[in-house]
Image 1 (tube, helix red, strand yellow):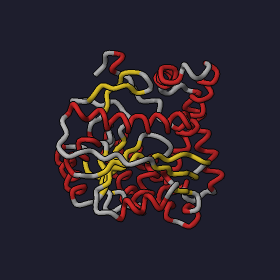
Image 2 (cartoon, helix red, strand yellow):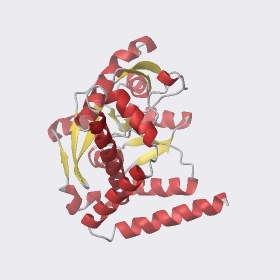
Image 3 (cartoon, one colour):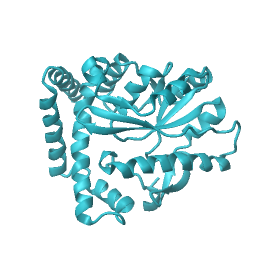
Image 4 (cartoon, helix red, strand yellow):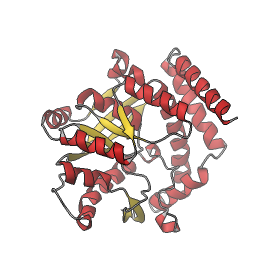
Length: 296
């Protein structure tokens, strides 16, 4: 039964992929909005998302405003799902004009240097599109892939990523070694550092609440001499985005674990600022503040 389920989901995925690449963008947008509204109506992970919003932004917004942000989060996420099926169109003339990069000269200057670059971002805006956009400019980008529960579907998704230039490796010790070697050669990677970290993380404030923070970006930078570039992608409309980059973060070689929070704090504040600008574009559905709940 499990195998049949996997094959069925993969088949539906491929049908949707073909269908969404044939219809007009305006129709695809309506489908994305409808999916978001359905997820909101059926309260899929609504309790988690609502709790997170109140915890992070409850002192800045009224309960009515929080609910509006929550609903818009679902609509945004529905559009993100549909946009993934359109990702291979990013190299077309139609889509190129929909992507604006803030301060492209600064990005080009950094990429043209011989230093490795760790593009640091979050599950914000459309992070899949961001990786595809970065591959147009950066050298030999290699990123970690999260293992999918449905292996066949995961292979299909990675095949689509590869078609737009996103090379991935598994989130294992072997995969991390590949990332390390790639950065040492002056190439690049993308790290999404906004979700709960297990293992040996740092516990730091995120929106004023204790959160478990991934050390990966800072550790890799310290070992490879790569710079960290906070980068975020903001929705301007359906299949239309603006990419903004922050100041680079340079990490000294061989720093101690106790020194890492100084550099992680800069990355956390950049992430917070991005979310504050457009709170409906962050993935509030994830259990981010498990530390405060005593969860591992």
